[in-house]
Length: 82
Image (cartoon, rainbow, N blue to C red; front, side):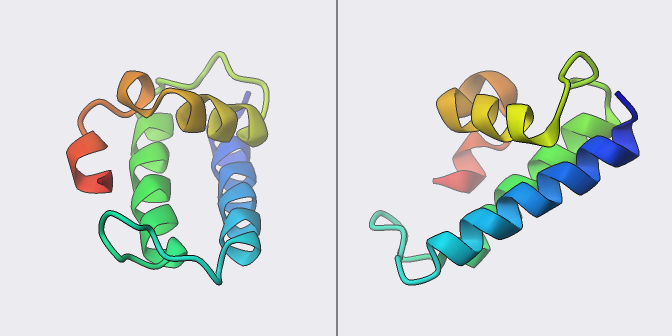
C-alpha cells in the first residue's frame, strides 16, 4: 500500500485513540495519552517511511500490530515509550 496513505490512516487511528483515552494518564510515567500516542505515532511514521510496514494493508492493522507487540515493531523506540 502507498506509504502516504498508511501514514494518514495511522494518524487518524491514533487521533481516535487519543480522543477515547483523553481522560486517562499513563500510570508509570504520568504522561497524558496525547504525549504517549504522539511518541508512538512519530516512531510508527518513521518506520513506515523506512518501509517496515509495506506489507500491511491498512493503518488500523499497523496500529493493532504495534499495540500487540511494540518491542517487535518499534524496537528502537520502546525505551522512549515507557
